Image 1 (cartoon, rainbow, N blue to C red):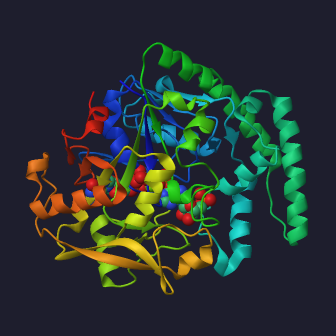
Image 2: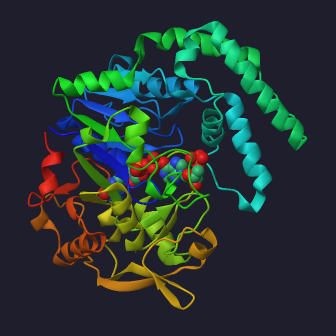
Image 3: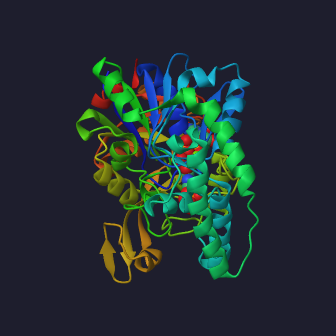
Length: 435
Ligand code: GDP
Ligand code: IMO
Ligand code: MG
């Protein structure tokens, strides 16, 4: 089987967790390459619901190796708490999970800095998840961060913490605030964590290289999404990691020619948590109805997600930036009751039409959607398992989206459960999805 990357095509929460869980049987390894516990990937099995933040969504499959790559920022307490939660389901997490020696360690002061920075920004705040993600990547880029390899040695922990503390306290002095961080306890906790995790620490690039040479297949699981990517997203309303396809290469140490296929995950409408432009946003009862039907509340923070119609400019942009060869279209069932479904095919900015996302965020804020209306199907689709089970108007809607984005749609999701999926066997990329 080929190695396939799963990339969010909008602003996150497209249903990546469900799709990864669904197609994991076709792979031996699932590897996360970016972000931290800001992600919330939901996996549903019957009446059991699991929200994964750091651990790859393949963890429920026995014998599948789950990998946390160098591109991640890992909060030790969050990782261990999540492992416990998964273990409660009878899964031997640590037998199947390895952690990169090069991943960065997210510390209590990162969280304090995240909250402080949001507070200081006031109405210009980003609406972060408050997990400390940005400040941890800042320390990484400033070359004073602590990595997993460091927590294995007590003297190294103390050395790194001293540098981080000095910088943190200088910032606090500059801001004229005080924040109590128990640095001694932090160091002790890290030492204990290091001792527990040591047997599971690996050189992930070398490991993946060896496994792929043996003929094993890897599913690269992206967190966040293209429009939240630090370089390609709606900057500054983005996260601090590479959520697009480039993140696979830098965040795992895997060369690009080892990525055999790229599947975008795209919701049948659009949502966003946090602040920043969202041209198709519906601030009325229609948006409210999408939120309720789609259960659009953050898997990590519980915040209500902002909802709007499908935005083809966004999805087409993501397809280009990442090289999507196919898209999995999720949450189609949420649109079931609608009479008519507008699809955004371009933007109007003052008197001009735009077909690309402008870099200038002030211009993007002013863009208004140009809609084409599609006919609704007004039938429940949750039971559909084959292309032929879908109502004709739903098939038209899926085809329209495929045409607008310029790629095929090998998979349509019609419910949160893994079974609620339609694989279109005529699509070339459908072969990626089956064991
Ligand atoms: P992720 O971050 O991309 O993994 O997505 P989240 O798990 O944060 O959000 C997706 C939400 O939609 C979760 O609550 C899923 O259980 C749910 N979901 C996924 N696919 C479908 C679908 O096709 N239909 C419906 N109704 N819900 C879905
Ligand atoms: P998954 O993987 C949706 C958003 C936050 C905020 C911005 C920056 O579940 O799709 P951060 O805490 O990362 O510094 O916040 O990014 N954000 C997400 N939105 N899904 C996610 O992950 C997100 N991870 C971060 O809401 O707007
Ligand atoms: Mg999510």
